[in-house]
Each structure stands twice: as C-alpha cells, then as structure tokens.
Image 1 (cartoon, rainbow, N blue to C red):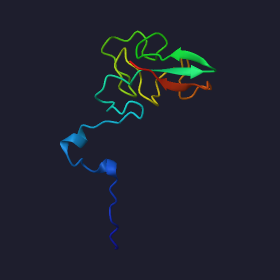
Image 2 (image 1 turned 135 degrees about the vertical axis):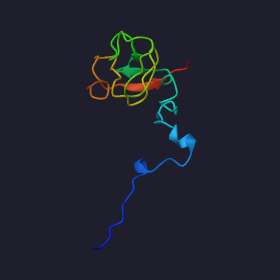
Image 3 (image 1 turned 90 degrees about the vertical axis):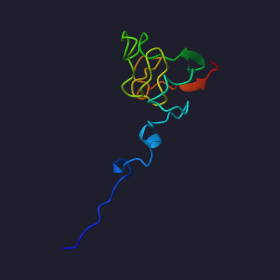
Image 4 (image 1 turned 180 degrees about the horizontal axis):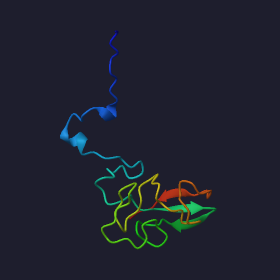
Length: 114
C-alpha cells in the first residue's frame, strides 16, 4: 500500500518560540494583541452625517450590560468599560441597537484622539 504524506496545517504545528505561543489575535484598528490589551482605541461611528458614540463593554445597550467589572467580551476580549475590537461579533450598533456586523445601518468608524 502506498504511503500518503500527512499534511500539517499551521494551526496544528507547535509555535517556534514562547513569544509566538502567547500571541493572540491582532486587532486591525488598534494593532493590539486582543488577549493582552484592555480594549480598542477610542473612535466613534458616523451614520447619515450624525455622530454616534460606540457602546463600551458592559454599558447600556451592550451584550454584557450590567456585567461585573471583571467581565471581558467573549469574542474580542475587551475588558468591561473599554471599546470592543474591530470586527467583534458582540459589538452593538449605536444607531439601531442590533449586532453591528449584521445590521443594515451604514455606519463608518472614525478614530478620535483620546
């Protein structure tokens, strides 16, 4: 019987260094390691020419509303009181209140100075 080589995907291979093994996903917006930073950088949303404040983890309207101060977002890892990271499944749209990734609002994110 002919032997077939086993293909190993990168996710199955052990990291080459300790630094690689402790690295989490990197946020496209803040460039931070989502497993280590408190949250994403400050920004706002603009929809139809009107500014909207982003909903922070644990605040009114957030998926984790009324969570305790040790709460972290289960998707992006942002801490309570900080902004969700770019592309987070749990971030809410400040316009309609639905999941930002799936709502129909035409919002765009604008970075603001902290």
